[in-house]
Image (cartoon, rainbow, N blue to C red; front, side, top):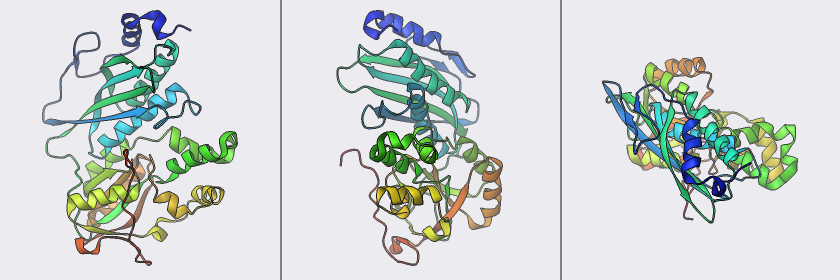
Length: 332
C-alpha cells in the first residue's frame, strides 16, 4: 500500500478528489481553488467546525479509519442538529505524516462522506498539510435553516421542560471502559457502550422533526457533558434549572459500567462525554407533540427536569445539591 511520501501531494489530492461525488447545490466542486455553492432561497447558512487530534480525540488502536471519519462527521452534524439545520456541504482539512498510507486516508474520507451523505451533505473541498507529530483532522460543515428558524441557546424560559435525546453518558462510559479493560472491553457485554463512543448517532432526523413540530425554545448539543452544556444554555437564557435523575430512569449499561469502574451511574451521566446528544428546553404545552415527533424519528426523548428562575442556579432534584457545571475543557 503506497504511503503519502511515495505518491506526493498532487497525486494524493487527485485520488481524494476522484473519490468524492458532487451533490445538490454544488456549482463548482473539488479541484478548483474554492467551491461554488448555491443555497436555497429563503434559507440561512449555518456553519460549524470540529477538529480531532490523534491521541486526544481518537485512539488508533480502537476503531478503523472509517470509524473515526464517521465520528468526526457526527461531531459536526450534532452542532447542526442543535441549530435545527439541514446539512449540505463540508470541507475536510488534514494534518498528516508522510508515512500515512493512502488506502487508510481514503477509508477515513469514505467514513466522513458516508456519515454526511446519510443526511444529504457532501464533501466539496479541503486542505492537506504535512506534520511530524500527532495527526489531526478538521471538518467544516455548512447547513441550511429557514430564515429566522434556527434554534438558539438563549430562548429557554422558567417553566420549560428539559429533555435529552438518547442516553447521555454512554459514550464517556465506553471510552473509560476501553481504557480500563483493554482487550476485555471488546467482549459482547460492552459493545453497546463502545458503539456509543465509536459510532455516535447524529440527531439530525430528530432535530428536523422536532423543529417541524414546534415547541423547542432552546437547544445545545451535549458534546462536553450535561452539567457544562446545561450551564451554557442557562447562562445564555438567563435562567436556572433543576435536573431530576430519578425521572430519567435506570440505564442498566451505565449501572454495569459504574460497578466495573468503581463509580456511580450518576457520575457517568454527569461526566464530560462525547455523546453528541441534544439538550432541549421545551414549551410544556408542546410536550406531546415533541414526544411524538421524536418517536416518529426513531429517537428516545427523556424529560430530565425543568427550567427555573435564575437565582435558583442548577441543582439536582430531591437532594438540592448543586451540580458541578464544569464540562470538558481543552486547556485544563
